[in-house]
Length: 343
Image (tube, rainbow, N blue to C red; front, side):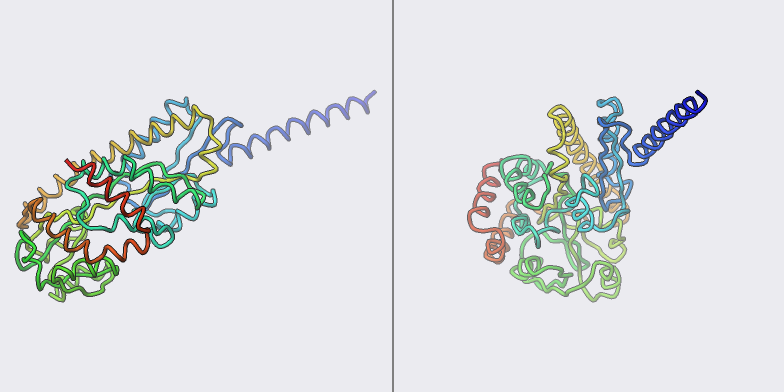
C-alpha cells in the first residue's frame, strides 16, 4: 500500500515539475500560450526619430486592441546590426519585421533602382500618392522571392543641396560646384549639370567642407542639421531632387501564419503608423528649417519649373543605367504612375 502511495506521489511530482518547466520555457521564448504572438521590429534610426515614435504608437495600439495577446518589441538604433543585417534576420525569421530605404537594397533587388531617378515628385503628397498607389504595390512584389512581405513605405524625405558659394535658384547655378559623390547613378546625374564630384565616405564630409575640399553636399534637411554641416556652409537650397522612402517589410511566413483577424489588425495599424510617421517628418522638417535659419543659413526654395528642367537633364543622363537594372516595362509603369498622380 505504502509503495503505491509513494509511486502516486512521485508521479504527481513529475507532472507538476514538468508543467512548471514547460511554463518557464514558454515564458522565456515570449510565447505565454499557443495563441500569443510576438513581433520583433529592428531598424537603424535613433530612438527619437519619427520612425521609432510612430512604432511606439504602433506597439501600444496593437497590444491594446489585441488585449495583450500580440506583443511588439522594437529594437532601434541598429541594436541588431545594420540595415542589411536586419533584412537577413527578417528573411530567416529571427525577427518578424524591419525597415530600410529601398535604394539600399537595390543591389539584391534591382527593381528598387527606379527610385534613384531624379525629381520624380513635386512634393511629399505627390510621393505619398505614388508609394501608396499601384506603383508602390508593384515595387513590393519583388520582396516575395526573398521570403519577405512588403507592408508599406514610411519616409526619410527629400534630399536638398548645400554649398558655400551661392544659392541654387536655377540650373546654371550648379555649374562648377564640387560635391560628394557616393554612387554611379548619383555621380552621373549631377555631372550632367556641370557639377564636379569627389568620392567621399559619409563621415569624411564635414571635414572636407571645413577644409574647402568640396563646396557642398546633398542630403536630407535633418541630416544636414544633425551632422552640423551648417557650420561649414552658407546656403541650403530646397532642390527636393530625390525622395527617400523607408520601406517596412515583414517575414513572409510570419504574415501568412496569422489569422485573418490578426493580419487585418496589424495591417490597419501599419497604415496608421505610416501616416503618423509622415506627419512627424513634416513637423521635424519645419522645425529644422527654423533652427537653420536661426543659425544664419540662407535658405531658398527652387521653383517647380526649374526643378522639372533639372530633372529632364539628369534623368536623360541616368535613364539607361536605371532601366538596365529595373527593365523597361517596370520603369515605364512607374513613370506613368508618377505622371498620373501629378497634380
